[in-house]
Amino acid sequence: MAVNAARGNAEEFDTGDVWSIFDGGLAGNKGFIINSFCNSENKYLSKTAKHIHIHYSESAMEARCTRLKEPGSQEGVALAQLETIHIVSRDAFQPSKKPRKHYSGCSTQGTILGPVGVPSPENAWLLTCADKTVMHGPMRAEVGNKVEDIEVADPARQKRRRLDSDCEPSTFHGMLTEVPSELIHSYTTAVAT
Image (tube, rainbow, N blue to C red; front, side, top):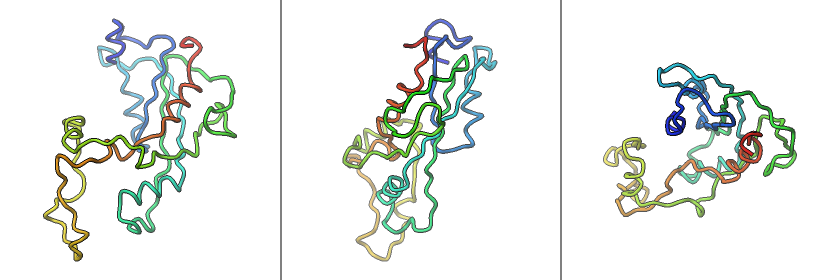
């Protein structure tokens, strides 16, 4: 609770605080996420949680997979289209019913946002591999196989080691700005307005 500690109160949420934590599409993270809010004595803070689901469109997720993998290699693979946002606050709240800002036909009474797209590759924030390594620091995870372990019959398709000067998206799991905009529109508490 670094934010509360900086305010001089690490023992409880301030009235009006609303935390939105995304589970990255891993449903097993719920307990860990909700129980992460502790005071200086590692006792759980008094809180309530709402759970909103992001429904990513199938076509957007298919395009993302095709962009990241060889076309056709994902044939028969299930597309993960759901992500949960855990909205945590001190006191229970239910926003008054109003239309969603970006998703027509939906309101704040529902528990689903969507269908949501994903950023196009042309709009991705690009970094050099060297800058990306610095940005992610020790949290950076190696992915894929070692280059020398890959055997491909067609040398033209052989993967090559990325150079520090190569550019790539800062994240391959980016989100459209409409999602945080929607959360601010829908879940701003009365105290915070």
